[in-house]
Length: 237
Image 1 (cartoon, rainbow, N blue to C red):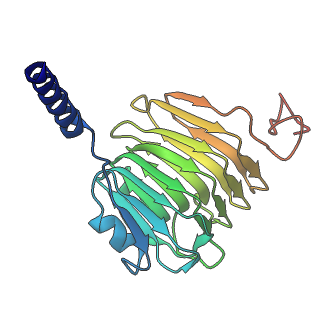
Image 2 (image 1 turned 180 degrees about the horizontal axis):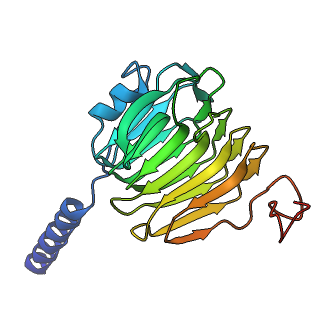
């Protein structure tokens, strides 16, 4: 009996060790700005697949660019605000000043960070957030006061050279020239824009400039209960 018990105990121990060994290890590191790195850009440059960058409250007078990265989240739960832009040549075959850009990257999430273009007065096209040939999610943030005579888009999704699949949710784009701008060809897959406030933009709330995929922009607030303005379909919007 003792021998049988010993064998059973050994089997249970081996199985338990095997399960413990097989248990998945949580991937990714939490990086804090500015305690770990002074700027959001420095944190991005040092981030690896699966990392989360937590941005503390405050004004950040430096834009940021995510280039060739994957599975990174850039989040603020305390009210961080970006107030500057950087020039990025050839972003989706377009030269543009941006406050945040995601280029040739996969599953990049930007959440809770506000972008205020009041003090951005560069010559040329200006955008708040640009996703070019990238996938990811834009959530729970505000993009406002982005204006120039060429573009002036709060959010721009570009996909000339690859595939962009982006979800925009719970966010506000206001007092820009264009709220959300889609540009590209049939290489673009799909875009989801739900539960956003798209109001007070000078030229248009949403512009589709050659985008060949599917845009689902239901359940947004356009400033009027009837929906977005359209010259013939909804002139009172």
